[in-house]
Length: 260
Ligand code: HEC
Ligand code: HEC
Image (cartoon, rainbow, N blue to C red; front, side, top):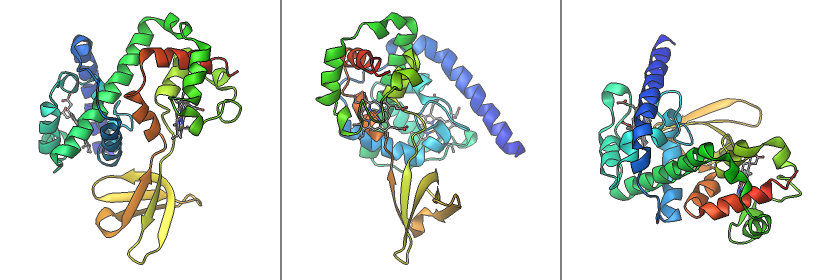
């Protein structure tokens, strides 16, 4: 317990330092421009499996790892080489393991982190000018929702999103739309016997996969003894980061704000 506290303290310190540095770095962040949505999505899956339990599901900091969207190293890494170096070598003195990933896997992680930075920057911009929230076009937002955005494949303005603008306001609503934190991932674990057990993903790293079953029981296995498949529903939103233009976001916000 004591050790965990110390680690958290280090993490908190690292986050504060990282945020202080990020203020200077914000202007020179790499452009997320043309990352293929596929790479972002693969990077997200890899990140959720290997990095999220320290750095947070959205890379914005967790129990034991700093906010990577505010990291000067990550933000200034235009080629991806610095991120690759950290991932391959780890930070053994500071509790981050080394990962033996292929160049392609690392590229996808870099693409994912850039998408997260783009989302965080969208947040920064909103912070500066909340009136942005009022500049969208409702009809265009509705068209995007039902068309190019593909939102209506999963959502309905009279179903799950009915009254969303009453539940969340302004920036909070935009955050939910850009990155609905806290949506639970599920996992199906297939045992050597062939039996499959499904539940809510409770823990995952290179070595251990754990779930909470429908009865609330926590169960875990070594990853090398079972097969598992994680279904992270917010992946769709992460993939969308690389598709939205600023106008799309403003129009969607205008439309969502009519759902009261
Ligand atoms: C067991 C916890 C843990 C895991 C797992 C982990 N990290 Fe880290 N990571 C850390 C900690 C703690 C630091 C800060 C270390 C330091 O300050 O030297 C860090 C630092 C970093 C940095 C450097 C940030 C900076 O500004 O210096 C990057 C990039 C990074 N991690 C990416 C990843 C990626 C990508 C993964 C998954 C492949 C991952 N980490 C998995 C704990 C972890
Ligand atoms: C592949 C399915 C999928 C697509 C496509 C999708 N979403 Fe989502 N969305 C989800 C899931 C899953 C959640 C998490 C639901 C939860 O937490 O209850 C979510 C959450 C949200 C939330 C927050 C809801 C809440 O009650 O907190 C908003 C707002 C939202 N999405 C808007 C959109 C918009 C706008 C688009 C299109 C640009 C879109 N979504 C596309 C699956 C999707």
